Every structure is written in structure tokens, then in C-alpha cells.
Length: 448
Image (cartoon, rainbow, N blue to C red; front, side, top):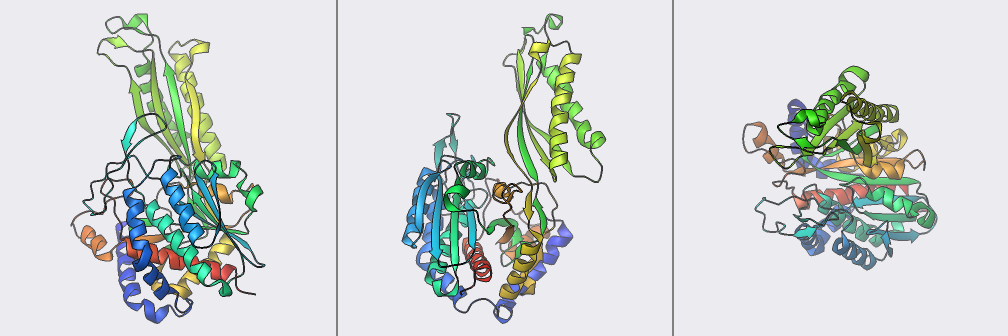
């Protein structure tokens, strides 16, 4: 989630102040937590993070990661269930009467060949669900999330006299394919373990400086749908195009036609994105192929626009096929293969926990979230209207302020998420994420 330069420069100044002033401002953080988290990082989490980073796994194939997380949560004293929604792990901590709080961390890596040069860089490869072998990298910070979850579980179990209720630690597969949360829910997550009173999650951000926490009420991230579009044709010799129906030409017309959805069918004040990310067809210079495959990502900020955009894609594709003489039983076929709704932070809960972050870490450390892109996050599934669970999703800065400042001044750029050069500052990210989660739980589930 990149930031506008002026806003980022303001954040850098804020981060510098926060880092230098935190001890003076963080008067509401429970005494001893920061020191305990730092000590546990030195004693265990540092090595654990490196292990996760060196052993990333693809979506729905996170068997080693899930096993390690299950072992870590059991060691912290939780009641652990494995194999929820595939490779998902659930750890329950029951501590008297009080709310049921869901804490979620995603664990999958990406098919990216790491080129960071870090001492602990990934050299892992894995055969994906499609049978193809890929290099694998934690190029989005999920190693931070799961390492922090272990720190959070360890810290909260060590201070059970200071909170009351039940904690549900969710180690979620396949966030990158926006399918893992849905898989866990469809496997009866809430039926088996209870419907939470609150749900919490965070994401490390390479665009934010270390020491910064970013949150807000309302929309935090957009919906996302991955769409496959098959465009059939009639094969022929490339020198005799009149004897066939060229799917490359038809699909090209569809790609152009799709651009009208946002520009001419969607309210100009309503965000939407239709991006064609892949176009595959043919295998020889002089052969008109029998089909073309398009892959699209579709984004919106409300369900009405989401449904209308998907319907428009199908309508345009089908009717362009008709316009080019395709038979009724051989028209373009659309399939939504992955999708998740808008990530929406409950306003009342966000106001409460934003205040907790400010009181715990200082006004300079908290920055209101402003959506300036249409990234998506399947944490939305845990807090959808269907379940009525109030959610709070926030960001933790992951890049040293001096690195961001140097990039703003024309120096080396800071690599984006999903880049082979992506890297964050592990200690600062993991420890602040842990402390923020602990602070949120202590506020929502005080001792009785």
C-alpha cells in the first residue's frame, strides 16, 4: 500500500519522533511488556523468524509452517487443533469468563525468487497445486505475522492474571490466494470453536517506517475477485483467417471493451478496478488457435459495485463473442476462481483500539489509515456481515525510517511487497506487532 510522497515524509518525521520519544509517551502500556517482548525476541523469536523466512511454503501447502506453528502454540500452553480448512491451525487459550477474541496471522509465501542478499534469504522451492515447481519467498511479511503471533501467545499466557476470557489464535493458510479464511470458516471454524466477540489482525508494511502503527474505522481494504475468462475460437491456417474465428483478435476486443466498465458504467465517485493481468493464446506463428485465456483482477469498495462489475465483464465478453460470429454453444466463459469482500473495521471498535495504540505507544506512533490503493485482504471473511463479528485490522511499519528517507531523496528505492527484493526490519516489526496485539487484548478482555 504505497503512500503519497508528502504524506510519507510527514510519517517519517513522525516515526523519528516516535522512536526517540516512545519511553516518555508509552505510559499506558502495561509495565514490563516491552522489556519481556524484547527479551523473548532475543531468546527465541529472532531464530524463529529466520526459520520461517528460510522455509516459506505456497498457499494451501504450508505443512511445515503449520506444524511448526502448532508446536510453538502448544509450547506456549494453548489447546491446539490442526488441519482446519486444510493446513489451518487453531490455538485456544481459555482463561475464565470474558469475551472470545480471534487473533489471526496468515502464513503462506509467494512464488517469488528471493534476491535480497540477506544471510537468511530463502532458497526454497516447492511444487505448487498446479504441478509446477516454483521458487518460494516470504515476499509479503507473513513470516513477521506468524512470528509475532508466537510472541503474542507467549506473552499473554505469561500474564494470565491481567486478562480474562478466551483467545482464539488463527494460523491461516492461503491469504495470497484469498481463499484460506473462507476454507477455515467452511470447515466449521465458528461452529467448532465459537463465534468471536472481536477479531484482530495486523499486516507489516514496507511502505511505513518502523515504530508506526496505522489504523482506522470503516473500509480498510477493497474486495478482490480473480476471474478466468476463456475466449473460444475456430482454428485455421494463419494465411486463411477467413476460414476460422481468431480468438486472439476477439479477446483483444474484449480487453479493450472491459475498459469501459470503470470509465463509462461506474459512478466516477465510486472506486473500481478491472485489470487484465494475463493473456495466453496460440503456440505457432501461422496457426489461428482455438482459444485464448485471460486472467483478471477485479476490485471494488462495496458489494453493489462488485456485483455490477462482474456482471458487466460477463456481458461484454459474451456479446463481443456473438458480434464476431461465435456460435451460441461456443461463447466466452467466465469463472470467478477466488474472491473476498471488503475488509471493514468496525467504527466503534476501531475508535477504542486506535485510542489504545495512542495511549500505549504515543501520539507520534499512530497514523490514521488512508486508503490510497485497492489492495485486498481475506481477513474480511472473518468479519463479514454474515457473522456480525466486529473487526480491527491495522498495519505495523516495517522499514527503517532512514531507508525510506533515503529513497525519498533519490537513493535506493524501498522494494514493494511481492518484490524479490522485499525485506523488512524483523526485530522492530515483530516486537511492535506483538506489543500492539497484547495491548489490544488487555483492553478488550480485562481481568475480572
